[in-house]
Image 1 (cartoon, rainbow, N blue to C red):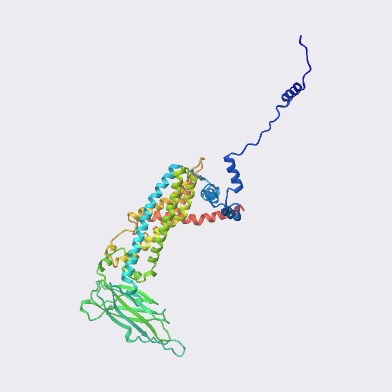
Image 2 (cartoon, rainbow, N blue to C red; image 1 turned 90 degrees about the vertical axis):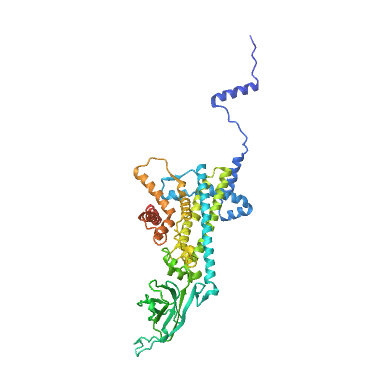
Length: 505
């Protein structure tokens, strides 16, 4: 038999611990707090600095930018790229909540970059064409209508001849006892004039300029072949020219070839004192005058009048604006494409950045560039535009070049493709749709497309017949439909949103 000994204090404590563990479970162990890792440190720094560099207030933003500009710019760029506040899809989902943001993966980014590179190429071609046309026009303007070629405010270059110029005076009306004029004044003898032309067919510019203080006087000019010339056969008067104030009118008579003309100036306004009116005739010496008149796309009379206006002409001013705007849009597009290309080359994942770039590019470049293209086509290819004015001096500009030739057509094509790239930003939510909901989704996408191409469709619809010589019913239906849907969406959506807010309130 073994002898029993009393338990030691250590054994007694161990026994009590085992009994307690069986009854209540083991006591919790105390652990030392773990040191924060790199990700946790970044979260703490973001929390201390604020994810939104603007949300901390203006003072905090300015102070952060002053203390560490590089860090502030980095935080700002990260916020612009990742924040839900800058997500352009939110603006679209506000109008249609059946859409959600599409994840732009690498193939879509690569396809967008390829499209933009081609667009940049044709934008450069457009800028070169606009610049060359503007340079050629201004050189022609300086050669044929420079300061040394201007007399009495009109152009008298090598291809024009001042055939007649005189200052005609008209006496004041005599008043009766009741203070009203009881008879018209007698036109003095110097109100009639004669001149000769050498142009074939006869083409000349008539200028009438009432002098102050009666610069707004009303007048009428009648011009007809001079009687007594056998070469004229039967004399036939040209249409009367009426006006108020200064006016310039080009007259032509393809039915008559003789050189002698007679005219008369009558003043229709009544003034108590004498009125003086400066009248002059400028004959054309353009050798290819027949080609100018045979050009179906040009209005010779309007082209000559606009060229005489020099830099005050609308077409010249619009073309200068189009050149500046095209250069700006090219620089913006180049910067945005370079940004996405850099991000895609080094990090591949650039979908969120691309969604912001597409929205920014649409607002800053794609949408306004459509207006720029329409303005350029109008200023250069209008019937009295700069191209027809160049036809007065350079026969090679008198050809039948269509405004939408291949270069301009491709420029329009890639510009419109860039504008409708916002369709890539959204996709329908994954749920089952009935026929009406699917039709609504198609209508919503069509509305987006119509708004994205609204400047071009509106300009093409208005100018298709007079400028682009497109009189097809199909063109009117397509452009008119897109224009009506686009303008209707822009005008109706804000009204519907306001009404919904009022009903909700």
